[in-house]
Length: 135
Image (cartoon, rainbow, N blue to C red):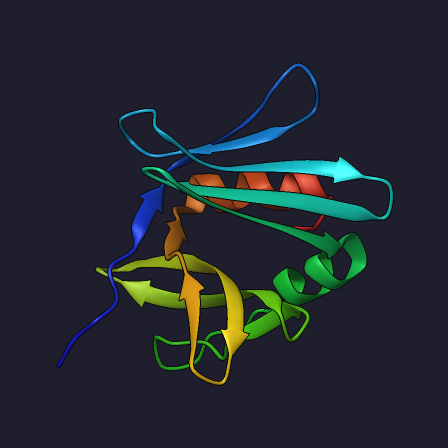
């Protein structure tokens, strides 16, 4: 059985311009969130690949605030359209709760391109605070 590999993002740092940077343990930026009117621009990076999504702020905050977990795995929520979306999900991994973020570009019925990230509890708290979501 093949399992997905996730890049762990461990910190969320608000920069001077208000952009939220999500970084891994070694300081590599894996994501940038920026407010744009009623939208949030999410840019996710993996080596030389970048996926950028522009999502309605209310849709994103609703999906994140409604995440529930039962039996170690939560039901995924998707935010976006039929061409691009962000899948968010909670799960239990080695006695800690992580939030998965999977930005996806959908080509057609034959395939899609996704990046797999997981937020540590510290990074999740930073994202929720930046979006104005209660803990």
